[in-house]
Each structure stands twice: as C-alpha cells, then as structure tokens.
Length: 136
Image (cartoon, rainbow, N blue to C red; front, side, top):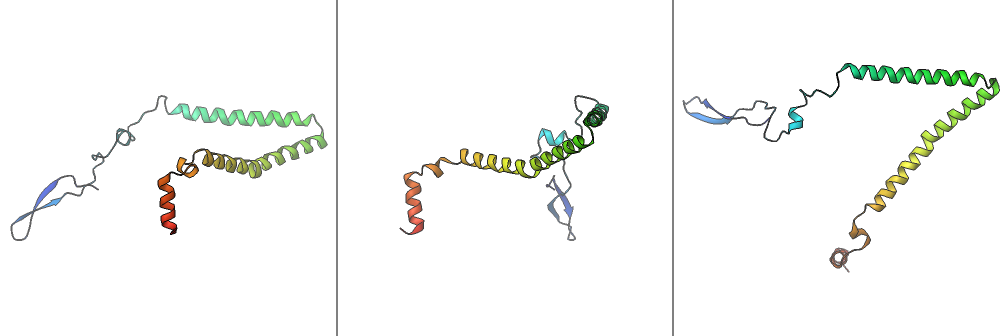
C-alpha cells in the first residue's frame, strides 16, 4: 500500500491534520507495463487452441503406446517380457542415476568456467588484504 494522496481530516479540536490515504493503488510509480497488462493480456491464438493442442498431444501419446504394445506382441512372450524389463530398467537408471550425475557435472563445469578472475589470479591488493586479515 502506498500513500496515494494526502487528505485533510478534522481533529477533535477543529484543526486539520495531514495524513496519507492508505488505499491500494494498482498502478504505482514503480509498476511496469508488464504488471499493468497482466489482467488484460490476450495471446496471439484463441483460448480453445490450447485445449485442442493438449487433446492432440494426449491422443498421439496413447496411439504411439498402443502401436508399440501391438508391435511387441510379434516378439513372443519371453522376448516381450525381456524387452519390457530392458526398457523400464534403462528408463529408471537414466532417471535416478544418469540425470543427477549429468546435472552435477554441468553445475561443476559452469562453476569452474564462470568463476571470477580474482579467484584464479589474485591481484596485489587481494594478496595484501588476505595477509592483513590473517595477521601475517
């Protein structure tokens, strides 16, 4: 809440005192164009396109899964079971082992690449300041 304007209110003695009006102002001096357009934003496509896109994505996923299952019937029972175990094993190993390791490696690589130059090559001032804080 920001003070919108100063209003004059009478006091018991008949004098007036200035006090801010604490009403909510949606368009304060710090608001941006994006904040003021949130309620009135209209996307480039109508609202029903979103529903059609989700329906298409779900139908395509179900159809692909159906045809994959039909294709595995041609393998026979033992091969289908081995294939299913192989797919599920590789999925969960990738999910629980490979992806976290990849994330950690990328995080360490970015931390190594994007570090400050003073961490690698300290200046004379940094060396003096370091010695003065250590008491050398």
